[in-house]
Length: 245
Image (cartoon, rainbow, N blue to C red; front, side, top):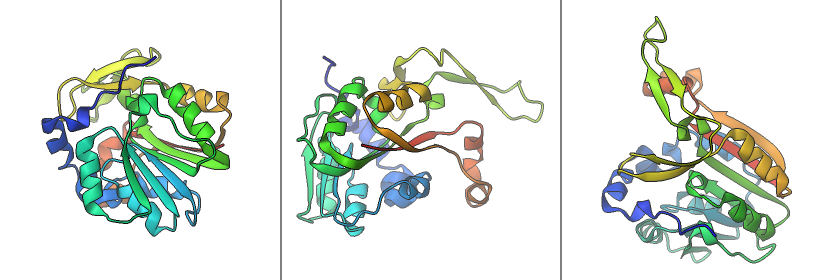
């Protein structure tokens, strides 16, 4: 059995830093990958939705506004859940503390399972996705984003590799999957590195049907509006997946 998930979001320093991120301040509109992820969602009217790693509850509130009948937001962080509850008193949204490493949900309880940038923290991803598969109705949808494996694999910039002054990313042990420790907003943040093939093959093994996969990077038009995003053309920061039960 896998150990409890690392609750880094209740670390005071981490939480303070996370709260200053653009996506934390502006919500879904502050997440550059959101337009692409939103296009991968089914029509939301009357759906029963579970948000795995709901954070501040931005997607939970979006789902209700888009017509979902009931939304369950799950997160390990008490600080995140407290902020989410402060933002809405909608009785059709329920926030609950849960460890996604050891999650139990009733069968056929949801039409949509959604997760944004949470699953790359989960060691027992197979166990979680087995639970999600059981909890979805036939034809239900799983839509999620994770850090792209090019990010979860150790990398170093090679500034000498390009005579135009562009850095090339050197990957270290990309095919060696498992735990990685990184210093992001706090020291010793544990993430799980998996290849794209592992994500896809695990979903297929569990009986999901792949609907769409995107390696998100900014378009030229987006770079024109946000020049600081240009570096993301070197390696896509997000992997977006839509799969059907």
